[in-house]
Amino acid sequence: MKKTNTVTTCFVFTVLIFAGLMIFSTWAIAEEATPVKLPPPQTDGGKPLMQVLNDRASSREFSAEKLSMQVVSDLLWAAWGINRPETGKRTAPSARNRQEIDVYVASEDALYRYDAEAHQLIPVMNEDIRADTGKQEFVKTAPVNLIYVADFSKVSGESTEDKYFYAGADTGFISENVYLYCTSAGLATVVRGYVDKPALEKKMGLGPEKKVTLCQSVGYPKE
Amino acid sequence: MKKTNTVTTCFVFTVLIFAGLMIFSTWAIAEEATPVKLPPPQTDGGKPLMQVLNDRASSREFSAEKLSMQVVSDLLWAAWGINRPETGKRTAPSARNRQEIDVYVASEDALYRYDAEAHQLIPVMNEDIRADTGKQEFVKTAPVNLIYVADFSKVSGESTEDKYFYAGADTGFISENVYLYCTSAGLATVVRGYVDKPALEKKMGLGPEKKVTLCQSVGYPKE
Image 1 (cartoon, rainbow over the protein chains, first blue to last red):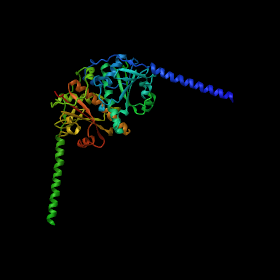
Image 2 (tube, chains in turn green, blue):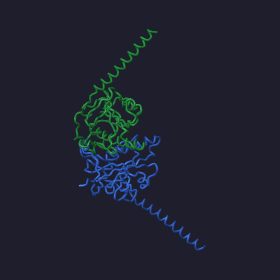
Image 3 (cartoon, chains in turn yellow, red):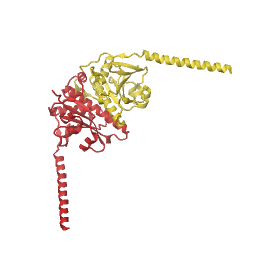
């Protein structure tokens, strides 16, 4: 009986040590996860707008070539960057200026959240979750999959239909900027709704008020 | 008694004649309402994309200056025009390429529907309904108010939330094109959801499956 007790005590002790180590390591990762500062975006240049609109299209074939930090910087600023620092207003509008959409970046290295104010990437997970961002085969290898997430807690007092409607519209404004930036920069892109959204929300550890709206793959066209 | 009968007969007869005349006149207006062919849109030129994104903003002050037919042509093509005639694909994407959004143009003269395929305006009502397109004062005098309408009959088999979500997203893509075109062309614009949508749908004579999503005012900035 005494031996059993000792074994039990040892087991509990070991579990506690492991739990402690896990908490420590999570904390250590969180501490390690310093934001990735993006280079300043190019806020002029690019192709003439009407030509860009003429060339806009969806493409589902991507080469394996990675995007440079400058391209990621330009892409995210074009999408949803701050273009009026004095008011914090952005390249895309949002209903009642709620700015309830967050843009996440899923790459081979990790999952990041775009912090527009500091124009930097906040690491969220040290894992390649690209395959979770859509049901099509190409999403696994597209160098970047953007994930648009609406924070419904910022949209209080509206009907469910209106919450979904405005989450859609506010995502659409941003996503069209991504289309036009990609067209101008010679990148391929496609916006996608064929996503297991609840599974992706769980994978990303989003709270109940945060909803994945659409995903958008970005990369260089396949030669 | 006989006199009363005669009066009644006369009354019914007069009503029938009036009804006939009304039907005829409606038919006559419908016949008269020949489409307004738009000049070919400019499909190149415009300001460089990144500069346009840097300057994008909402503006609620418009001068009384009207838009030329060339500007209306460019505006509508940029918004939701066909950029790949061989497939009928457009300057903005839509979920599953359903193309369920129609763009209406409310001006001082009339209400029109944009027919992207023939790049022309289809007259809908010979009436200035600008005041019905929003609750703000400025909508009454902005030279053009675009009205985005989703045709839910093209979005069968989806949940109500998804119908509204995709109507929002598909409107957002188009509306952002309008923002960027206006920025490039020196026009002011603002997209608006503060609209009595059921009243506007009734005014426009839309069927039960057609829903106003957003409205967007366009004009030259007030000096």
